[in-house]
Length: 351
Ligand code: IPM
Ligand code: MN
Image (tube, rainbow, N blue to C red; front, side, top):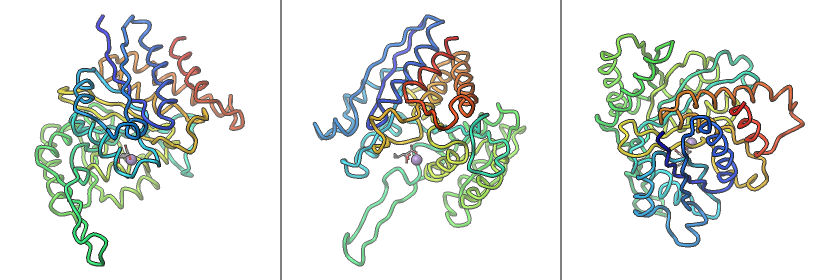
């Protein structure tokens, strides 16, 4: 059997705590098949930056490129100026490794309560473009600090970049029972990019004739996510809209403690990266309070991406069983630590 070489970027704050549990569950899932897991830890994040001034060197990047996948905890600390680690590390990884599909599944599991009064069936996936849009850093500022300051952040959308992510989203929709794709944008205002996205969805739809499509402006989409989230099956959208919508998606389906994500390079020219949607949560770091479930669900996405479909399903099932038991077994007052949740889920994977 072939082994897995995994880059581990635990990062900052609760990142180290949740990644430890993610790795324990990954080990448990792979054990029966005898698949060898080789992990290489990368010291990246706030500590490294304070010590060396480095965020992600070419050497780090080359070593990471030689791995099969990356498991990332969380990046960011209030002691580091805003943007330094985000741009210099997290986004640099996504861009350099061409993670153009930022996959964020949203499901309201049994036993999990939603803040919505009538959530209905929530089971959709957001395909967020990961390498373009306003995230490319194409902009600048003139006359900084004066009353005449002009700041621009230009959203870059290429036909190549839009088409490849739209095609991936169609393929995902075609593989799901409902076969429905919603484009979210704002083409009534952002006419240039909006029309490129709209034309692309129309054109690629010809390759997937059994997928139905519709469209929502991003502001309306936030209403639907609150009033009628069951209308969504697959959402395809740009980098920034996808960032915002997936936080809302997490909020309606049990919170960011449960929200998993995959930064995928579908062409497999570089390793894909799996990470919880949540951040480093410095306020609760080191206290064993963080819920490792989002990381563990990200591990399920990792297994699936590497071709371990059965192992992925076992992890997913273990999490669902754990969640279903939470209200009864743990009743709100008996809150488990990060390690306990990880151990309980790993035990279900093993049993
Ligand atoms: C996310 C985060 C990142 C993003 C930040 C930390 C750069 O919010 O993964 O959703 O905006 O993509
Ligand atoms: Mn975000």
